[in-house]
Image (tube, rainbow, N blue to C red; front, side):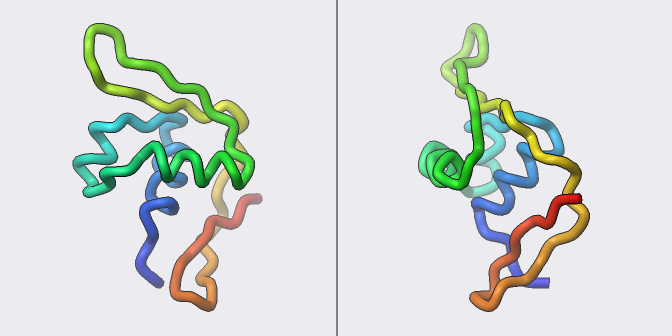
Length: 85
């Protein structure tokens, strides 16, 4: 299986938990979470975001979550994308 991109990792985290924080992204070496979310938004992701109460940490929540991921499909450029049921 090809290496997952940062966009793929964010999408998987959103699919599994319905939310992602800037702390999670930082711990996984993603410094531009906002740019990744913006790219996903261009692909149709509807999100809402807010600061976690009492902190300076930001959290994005997925509003229009798709169905369950069935498998990952490898693309020609050695990236992967999710396939939904």
